Structures are given as C-alpha cells and as structure tokens.
Amino acid sequence: MLDRIRIVLVNTYHPGNVGAAARAMKTMGISHLTLVNPRDFPHSEATALAAGAQDVLENAEVCTTLEEAIQDSTIVIGTSARNRSIQWPQESVRDLSSHLASHHSQENIAFVFGPETMGLSNEQLQQCHFHLYIPGNPDYSVLNLAQAVQICCHEMFTAYQLSDKGSDPLTVEPEYPRKEELSQYFEHLESTLSRVGFLIQKHPGLAMTRLRRLFTRARPDKTELNMLRGILARIDERLSMTPKCSATQPQTFEGTPHDRSEP
Image: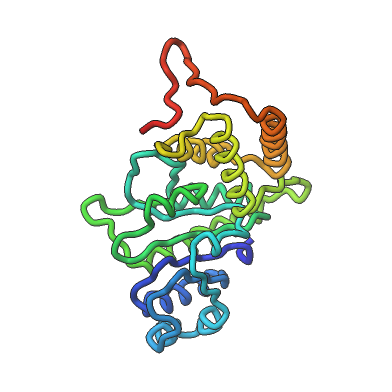
C-alpha cells in the first residue's frame, strides 16, 4: 500500500522544506514525491536537509498544475486546518489513515499540502475527496510543512502495519475512477446541465460546487461513474434530436423555489 501513496507539495516556498519532507517520507517507506510549481528546485538546501533521502528528491516529479499532479490518483486528500463555507468530508489524520488502510489499500492515494504561508486555496481543496486535519494545541496548532508530512506518513505507516495483520485476502475492493476521470465527469455534467437550462453561465453561483461535493462524498466506483456518464450521454442525444428545446424552469420542492444558480 505504501508504494501507492504520493505526497504532493504545492507552491512550496522554502527549498529546505522539500528536502525535509523527502526525508520524512523515506523514514516511513513512502517514496513518491510530486512538486507543483516549487519556488526553487532543485536546490542545495533541499539536498542537504534530505540527508539520506536524496533518491526521493532525484525521482520527484515536477508539475505545473495540481490537476496534472493528481490525475492518476483515485483518492485525493487535502490538508487543511480551516473550516470552509462549504463543508467537505473532513477527518483527523489518524481516523482517515485507519480508514484508508482498512478499506482502500489498492487505490492510488495522494496527500496534498499547500504553501507554507497560506495552505491550499478553496479551489484546490475542492479537487480533493477528503480534507484532513492534524489535531493539536488549540492555542497554537501551527506545524511546519515537513512536520505535517512526517505525521501523515507516520500515521499511514502505522495504520498499514495494523491493517495488514488482520487483512482478509478474499476481500475484493471495488475499482474507483482516477481523479482525471472524475474531472471529466464533472465537465460533462456541467455541460449537460447548462444545455438543459439548469445552470446559468452568467450566474453560475455555487450549484456546481455543491454537486461536486455531493458526488465526491458519494464516491461512485468506475461502474457507477460509467452509468452516470451514460445517463448524461442519453440526455445529450435527446437534446440534439430536439434543437428547439426550451430551457427548463426552476423546480419547486415543498413549495420552496429551487435556485439553479445560487448567486
């Protein structure tokens, strides 16, 4: 399982943190490191602080966007200590690590860490299946980037060791779509909903954000996602057969108008 874990550092400012994170990873048996637009890499300070983990640095993948970095991942976990206006599934590092080790040992997992000063943006966090937090002193819970990486890697290492002792070799886990496939579904969904008049392009509001949260929380497997894509394809086909189809009107539920655009 550990060889399926990827640590993704986004817009890292200090090169020393990259090296220290690589060292933290290797001590826990994790070797896949991806850097998204690092400020200065490669760098001698990163090499120095990596100590015996220079091989992790040498094999690190450098990407220009977070989308590129996580496109092959089936579970993406964003680290965040802040509450957001739209709540996403959020768990502590220990609970989430235990869950992943017990139920998702065959998936490609990405842990995403934001820049040192501000963390991940709302847009970046919305690309993640889960938001992870590390419990700490409520009066001062600030962790260095490499410390946060070390804690996450240690919790996954420990959870994997415990889970492996009691694992059932006959258990068949469902196959989940890669992040790239899920993104393609969201693009298809937005396109179809726009065609039927449910989404208003000039006033998109939060409708797609909430739909993304819904399907991210539901976590459809590949078969289910293919079925959803098939439904959208059939709707698209019928729309093409009826070019003069007018935009649908907002529906009502229990007497309350359903705001399509949520401005």
